[in-house]
Image (tube, rainbow, N blue to C red; front, side):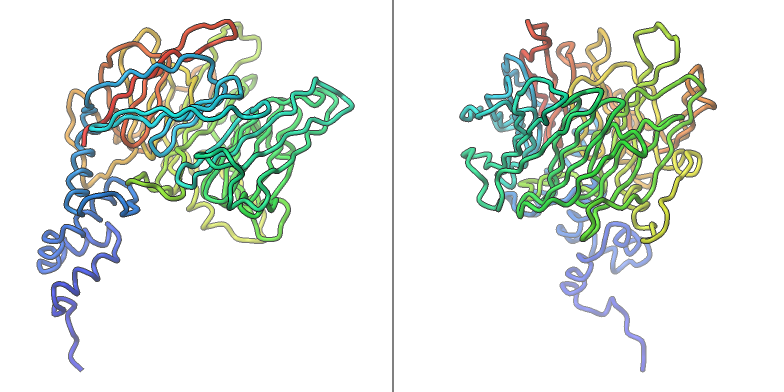
Length: 505
């Protein structure tokens, strides 16, 4: 029987078939076959799919406009980001204390004094800001997490009891709708109680307490220095507790981050140098499976890791616009090192950047039933990360969006600096006054901190541009850069206003 060529199919059938391929396969088809290349170049839908792949974006396909319109906007936004080309800047007063906040799906949500919630719909090019005040929340709220695409907000309430070595502290999760502040209709148990037992050092006091959401998974992370770190995980819809375990015992866990809705990482201060432990929830198991620990750059004797804060962009369950692909997000780890007998109060701060798909690869290569892998830095870090020394310090979260990271506000500087790890060697952007590509290995000298020089090779673009004012910090999402200005209030720093720099599209 004679062989048949794929190119003998009708063009409309070929087009529909090609839409099932990923970007790498499409570019290969275009490179090896003139017929396929002609069809790919002539199809708006395929070109949009390719552009989404190069931008590492997902599109829920519910935004208004035709595919041609979406393709035009996507390309225009990509060019605008490459030049940090923003539209008219909006200044939005936001006075007062800010005890908790979140930026997700185009909204900036802020809590004042653990009681009052305000929701700011952030402006973009062509749209204005709008502000909503929610009803005051009952109780003292320590933290909250939200997903506007699920009309979901979760409050963590503290019973505000005095410190006690005899009585436990009671915390309560309230699962509500963002729109009405009523119990969420999809939550079978809209109230989840948690008990914090006292210990000999910290009594029943709380250290760092954070809650995070991803899809149907809700996590509470409690960190008390030198004593314990506790991780509690629920399915917020059915109220089932998926895990509750001491995350401090093995590795001195400092912070928590999602890899996907069932896999997470713990940044740990295990000496020397710290590590990143990867855990995965297993069906029917009360504790997650420890998959691997990735060792970070080894420090010299007498140098310790004081902090290792991990951060990554939030993932809405049902995004209303094209958003960064969850598997392509970049994780940041802000590490603070101190030396014994060092009187310098400006502790050395460094940042480690690791792509989410690398962690997913480690998970995929793991074998159930085997001991966790301990992976030395030289086996993974050089090729799969970027390690840099930071000039400033992060005081605000939400400085990561997809693969873009906005750097801390520099001391006495009116420049915004962004690292963009979405870089394709076959499609490099031209360098300019704004954009510079870092393609080779970078070195952080060993100095007084590390046993040896630290070399890393994850490529990225560095984008810089002057801004209107000096800011206390920055945030970023897929459509805008946000400059924050704070001032000293009677109880510490208070937010005065935010300036929104909307990226053109």
